[in-house]
Amino acid sequence: IPMKDDDQLAAIILSAMTMIPNGGTENVVIQEVKKVSDATHDLHFIISGYDCLNICEVKIGVRICETTNGKTFNAVMTRLVNYDKYGLTRGCLIRSSDVPRSWKIGYALKEKLEKEQGGEVVVLKKNDIKPLVAIQKIYEQSEDYGFTKEEVKQFVKDLGLAADNLLICEILSAPV
Image 1 (cartoon, rainbow, N blue to C red):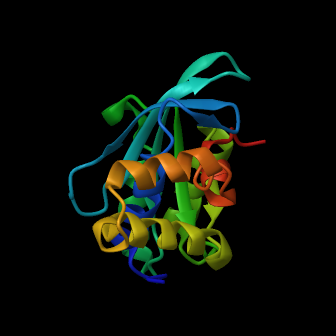
Image 2: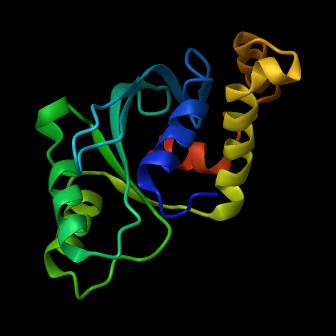
C-alpha cells in the first residue's frame, strides 16, 4: 500500500468513489466524482452530491496530504480552504498523522478548515484503504480475471464494498 504517495492514494479512493455514483452512503447521494487536474498541491478530486440529512447540495473538495514538509502542507491547505475556486461547500483533508503544531501556518489553516468552514480532517487508516487497494487492482486487471470493468463495478456496487468502506463513509459524512 503506497501510504506516502498522495497521488496514488487519491487514485485508489477516486476509483472506489466512481463505483458508487447514483448510489449513496452516509446520507449523501453521489452525483459526480471529478478528478482535478494534476496541478501541484491542488485538490485531488471533487465529489458533487446531495446530502439527504441536511437537505442540501454538497460539493466536497478532497486532498490527501501525507507530507512531512511544513511548506508543502501550507501550500496544500491554502488551496483546500479556497472554497470559491471550485464552489465547494466543504473541504476534506485526508492524512494519517496529526498536523504538528510547530507548522503554525498549516495548523492555523487546518483549524480554519474545521472550525470556520465546516470542513474536516479524515484520519487515513491502513485497514480502511486496504480493501480499496484490492478493488482498484481487480478493476485494473479485470480482463485477467475474466471480468469486464463494468462487471467489477456492478459487483462492488451490489456488495457495497465501496459504499460501506469506513474511509469513504467518513469522507462523505458531514463533520460533527
